[in-house]
Image (cartoon, chains in turn blue, yellow, green, purple):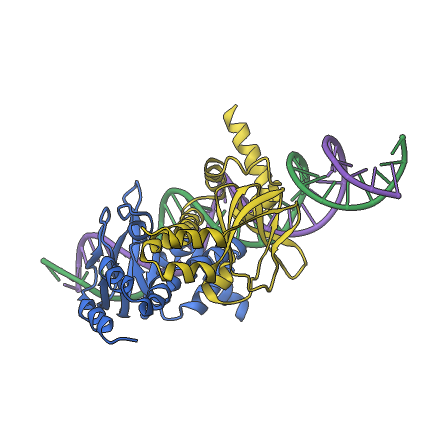
Length: 181
Length: 181
DNA sequence: TACGTTGATTAACAATAGTTAATAACGACT
DNA sequence: AGTCGTTATTAACTATTGTTAATCAACGTA
């Protein structure tokens, strides 16, 4: 593999730090950056007609974050992406990445595997979880799959991610705790 | 754009016809073909520990069908893909497609847009539907999005896809009908 | 025709989730 | 310390779903 495209890639990768509450991608934006969480926690949510924030997904360390409304559908983001903790990310513009990888077959694998596959794999796993599991099983699986999120994010965020209400999540936690005694 | 790679592509695209019940991809298979439904209906399901078939997804005309366990995770398929009606498909092997598109930057767009995006877009839309909507809203959306599936597939398949029981789906249909009177 | 299978509906009941409201715990801020 | 706002928990109630079983209709087949 040639060194030149790798250098070109590295020149385009930025590191950034966000403070808690700071916005990475705002609603309506066509931001095409691809983020990779090095440390911290990113929250992705939408605002419903009652002006409530409904959390769609949480991204802890080692997870890719991307504005899929824009990158997949070429539409403005319906979601807001904010840092929930002080968060450090790697970041590269999608078009820049495409330009570099298009000219270098050896980097195509990186492109396919790194950017897309991880996020897409998570998406399909999540569908299976939502279709095949009960809310209670879903919560237990979430705790297993993302042990480093629980206790860092409020329960109401996690309830939204699981597609249930915070009240119901509280009862589920109670049921599980009671059963284990 | 050069004509050569397009010819190469066309040489590798096959058309096939499946009879009702015929298997396209069996459980445990590492089939890497990409199908596109020209006419008919493909059903994707898994078999649970009680030997019940749980339908995961239905693919009518104009939809891409792919073994995502293998193509995304490089694992054997957990699902069976069968024809529910007499079904005609286009079909190309993923590796053959990669080989052709890798050598032709102009075809990369086709690769990204055709194969992946459609299926991935559907996946993300489905997550939003499962997380944000009630089962009843989900059914109404499904009827809107896939009017050509309802009345062609048994309700029990559709109930599985929506993540509810057939009994519950029957009640939902009843509720909706009652409300409209 | 008679039989068996399958799928949809309905009923009855238990379990769970949604909704609303009250309360308690906690932290931020003055 | 006191106040405010947020979050989690709990209660009370309603609505919905899951589960099981019975019934009915449709279909293919002996």
